[in-house]
Amino acid sequence: MARHIASKWLCALALAAPVMGAHAEFSDNEVRIGLISDMSSAYRFVGRGAHIAAEMAIEDFGGTVRGKPIRLYARNHELKAEVALKHAEELHKQYNVDAFLEMVGTNVAVPLQKYARENNILALHSGTASSILTGKECSPIGVHWTYDTYALAAGTAAAIMKQGGDSWYFITADYAFGKTLQADAAAVVKRMGGTIVGTAMHPFKGKDFMAQVAQAYNSGAKVIALANAGDDAIVAIRHGYELGMLRDPEKSVAGLLVSETVVRDVGLYVSNGLKLTTAWYWDYDDQTREWNARFRKRSGITGSMFTAGVYSVVLHYLKAMEAANSDDPKTVIAKMRELPVNDMFARNGKLRIDGRMVHDMYLAEVKKASDSKVEGDYFKILSVIPGEQAFRPLEESECPYVKEARNT
View 1 (cartoon, rainbow, N blue to C red):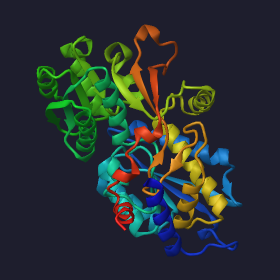
View 2: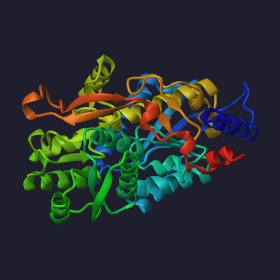
View 3: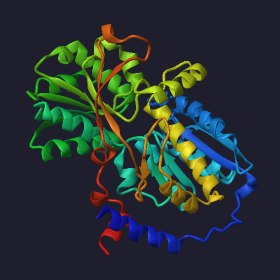
View 4: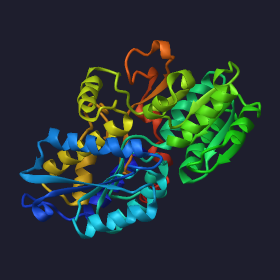
């Protein structure tokens, strides 16, 4: 079924797209990428590392595409949609960028994807989690690269359900991302026969939600799931530790989006035993360790799935442009789908027609402090989740143009 949908969509795309021959050209004789990310708010750890990772990808590629220089413009959206759109308009009208990059934060990513689609700009999402970017808010020239809420939920929820954690209570950030993360995890729990005991919503970028954590802990649920990220996850984990929740053998605490930076900031002593799903880990194999050593030497910090994902998507984008001999978004994204993704982030990854890049994910557990050997040695990888299992099947996609192909 998935191949049938893909073939019909690609045929339609081929008919609609302009024919690009040997004389294809690059606009402005340059490749221009506009990195729009959070560098000062709740997800600042994503944006600051993204800038460095993107520079590394450009340098590793050689700094040019078919002799055309590559320029990177970085902007701080402060996790505010209105600020992000102002940057998007500036980068589009003043610099005529070919692609928007990174765009962490669902509240920012969705309007930026719409702006990019309306103005024929490729959208390269990496840090944003919400699966709606390849669902109801998908774009024919949009890419969602690193991970999404469905993959995070499917990995963590399925693993804990198999271990007997069949009753869940959610502590959820009260905005689109948190609600989507909860919905994706809850769907897995229900499908596997579990129950949702309740939900405690907390304000986005809140400073104190001890009441919500206590409500979850006292609910009787076996699993307390944190449907939040960044600073919100840090607050929730600290509250949970203070209440003894993380040391309770009768409870499992699941972080639905917990990064290395969150663990670093709360410490291994507080967060050990927390289960999570990640798209990448620096100490997985020789390739990841080699790249991380270079990134760490340059940045002073350990790489994460956010930085590795930015590096990977930029490198693949540049490879596709060179192969296509064009910076036309429709032509380039078609080539991105055609080329396999093989780098230190993903092995044999594949970009689908809905914009989702499918690759393996990893179930992990936060180590005890006594088991951590070096700085950044935070996770124990428990298992590999094949990409076909980790991400939402194409047959279930809510992407409008995929649904149309499916129904014809």
